[in-house]
Length: 229
Length: 235
Image 1 (cartoon, chains in turn blue, yellow):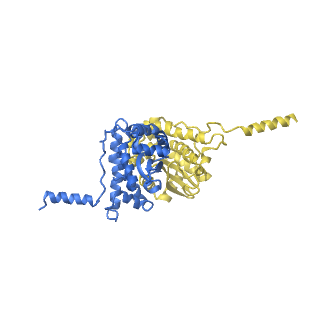
Image 2 (cartoon, chains in turn green, brown; image 1 turned 30 degrees about the horizontal axis):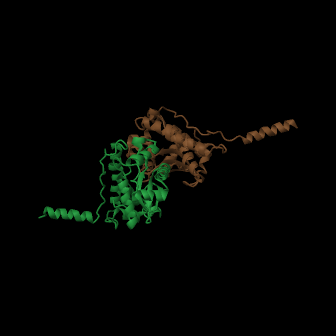
Image 3 (tube, chains in turn red, blue; image 1 turned 135 degrees about the vertical axis):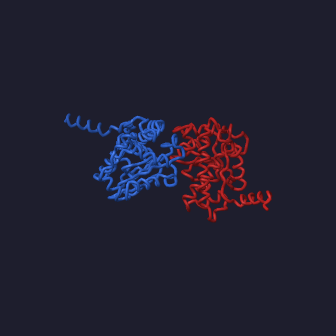
């Protein structure tokens, strides 16, 4: 006889063993970022694009030694070794990270005097200079890609851009990603069409979740670890 | 002596004239924006042509300012040598090529594959349906990952299907094999289909066949086969 306890215990341990990666829900629901990003955008971006990457990755690792590994481990292991797996795993990671990098009533500058604000001033000179560099990276990523803020162990921040599924955790030595913006056209096309600069402005002014970025900064500096997703 | 001086001055003046500021232009579509409905929607055609293509033209004009005027086709060969030429010069050629190979559905339905092109298709792929299947496989999101194009090219005495990233095309030395000349191409950047199809790229690809003008594709085939050169485009 399987008691409810036994059943729950089995489920809990199978998840803890890292079976298949589960698509995380949107932190704010599909209507949560209106009017900056519409509910149709979030629904399709999350339920179709992100879900597909997750499902494809899961089916590609099934029966392999990566099956029970963390998402980050799969990303790192597949980089330059298995393009199809990397594309899907990295996109699964990138999107899980991207959702958390945004929030309702976000954007603007991090709180004055915070560790993050200080790091931005130390690394860029000012928030305005960070904003300028991040916007430029986001606007000039040609084709499909991502813009990133990364942090090294010493707390030095820098901006970079990547193409396709690439993620600075594998493709640069500049540091750990602490903020990202998706600039694949599917991220903004329904709401902004060709006007990517408008989307970037809205992202920076209204959406960035600086609390999450601060957590990522702390974690990167304390232990050199990426966000847990 | 005066005559020589005048002639000399005239020649010097001619050589010194820089390239016209706007050497490249967005060619007008041969059909209205809504003409490819329901397979490609009017809003997409308008934004794709008036905004995306126009931006590539503006940027290639900027990149080529003060330089010798070069036909956009001829600019493709060495495009990999300069980022703006690769991205914006490629973007201009690719889109100019794309618009003219399409036609409204009823016109497309009446268009014919020439016997020479049909023979080449059968020889290289077995049949039209096999070519179509191979093309659709190359157009899948896993094959051209992110932004890019899919092409049918003449390569020697064969036809080949190739995918290229971003605004690269097979005419650019170093992108595909040498001496590959596109006769048919499909834009699979998300901006080409997102408003109507969103993530459903395979549906966009399979619907697109309904607006291919096989008369033009057959002309392209005849041209590249004879000249062993890329198809010229308007603009």
